[in-house]
Image 1: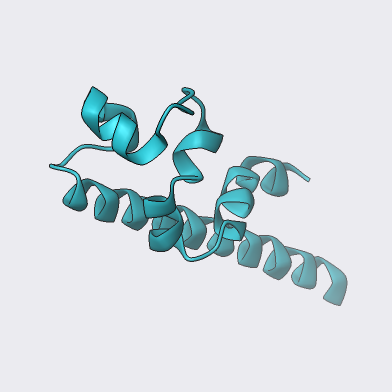
Image 2 (image 1 turned 45 degrees about the vertical axis):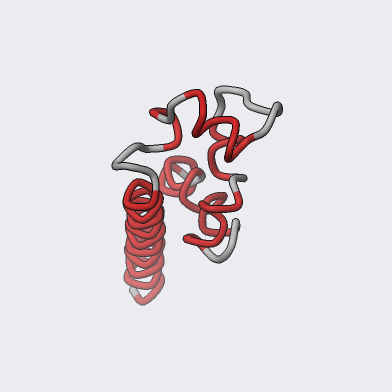
Amino acid sequence: MLLPALARAKAKAARVKCVNNLAQMGKALIGFSHDNDQRLPWQLTPRGVSNHYGGNYTEDLGSIYSLAAMKSELQTCQNIVVALRCGKASSQ
């Protein structure tokens, strides 16, 4: 009788953790946009792209979240990895 309750509590804790990580990513994106004329990383002007990426710009999530500005907002890249795995974690 106790094990199903523990499994439900564990699943709920995993969902709460995912929601918190996604909220942290959203806050980081908002902070980034406040510093960059209300533009998100994928909305940067060519000058903004060269300022943040130099010549190493590619359109994928890895390049967006590896920006120094985003890293400073997130403080750790572990939040990103965990948040991106939320779908996988909740289906297991």
